[in-house]
Image (tube, rainbow, N blue to C red):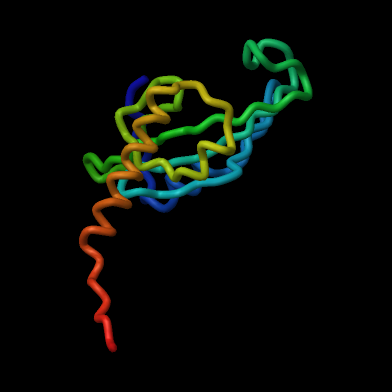
Length: 135
């Protein structure tokens, strides 16, 4: 997929990306979202209203997925590139809690997310100030 640029501010673009959407075929609702730099992470719940929305969904059934929208400014406009977990995006700053909100689609990507957070945790512990011991 490519990039989509729109004549709106960054905050307006983010509001649009996390807004609920209703179509004849599906209802889409963002149940969690977090912004990490210019990466918008979302857990999206899709509820089918018709056959063929997703191979695993019958009408009335829902499925959650983790979405990764890359944000960029170009020529005075903000744009986004939509990705999801199944595409194994090479971005790993997804909140760890999101992994519990959606079924696994890419074990390798999730391992990368866990490794990213483990490195950050180790780095924070190594740079934390030592507490003075008083006797």
